[in-house]
Length: 85
Image (cartoon, rainbow, N blue to C red):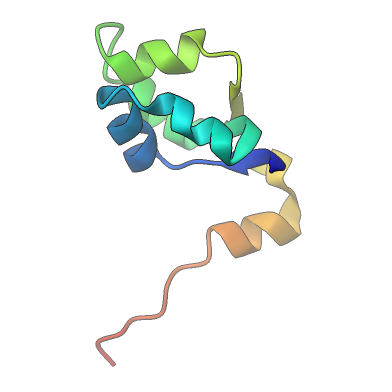
């Protein structure tokens, strides 16, 4: 198991709504939520279960994108090739 893993908004929302957020801990001890992802989710308001999860779950850690390092950031956010060509 890895020490950290990075998650995007959609899986985080899906897992928290389905009450299976704990499955993320099978991948890593600490799950990093990039600041832009956290901002997107926090915009939903305090009544949202995913907002509460980000604020109350110790192992969900909001990190600035710069925390991933240039090499990792380039790999993690590289767009997929357009398959229509």
